[in-house]
Image 1 (cartoon, one colour):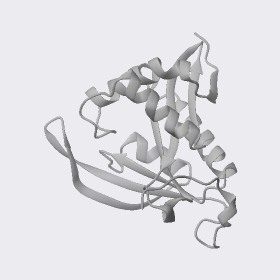
Image 2 (cartoon, rainbow, N blue to C red):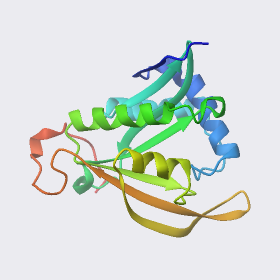
Image 3 (cartoon, rainbow, N blue to C red):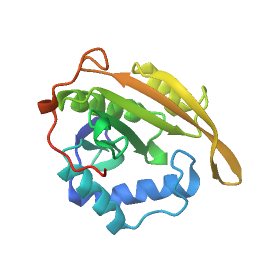
Amino acid sequence: MSDTIFIRQAVRGDIDRITDIYAHAVRHGTATYELDPPSRVDMAVRYAALNEGGYPYIVAEEGGTITGFAYAGPFRPRPAYRFIVEDSIYLSPDFQGRGIGKALLKRLMDESELLGFRQIIAVIGDGTPESASVKLHKALGFRLTGTMEGSGFKHGRWLDTVLMQFSMNGGSSVPPDPQSLPERNFNK
């Protein structure tokens, strides 16, 4: 197996592996608050919605194996949030602790900035100051903006959710150019 991590855009052919990685996180982890793993069809629909919406969706490969995936999607469905995205990162358990999450998050940040977004929000399930995800986001410049105590219940225990935020393209210091992002459909 090669030690070279290759980050690239996700394609439809990656959905089976993405589904497997996410299913493991749902069944065994607390980063996501989903309780039942979504089907391959559900994951394909989610991928298509983000892809068609112009949001970044990437995978990490090592030695021809997809080792993780990440995407940025809408933070909330209301139009006033259109300049903000929420990041999601999931790794295969066999590839954790090797810098792949950092490479994925850095690339996601770069792509989100190029697309004109102003903020990235990390909504970290089972977040504690010692958790790998909190440390990862902090290392790349995210700042803690809050903790929602006991906001999820999974695997027989209450979980806290940590919110972190990263500003780019001027963040909230200057008004956005309304033309800087593609038109998106929002619920009213």
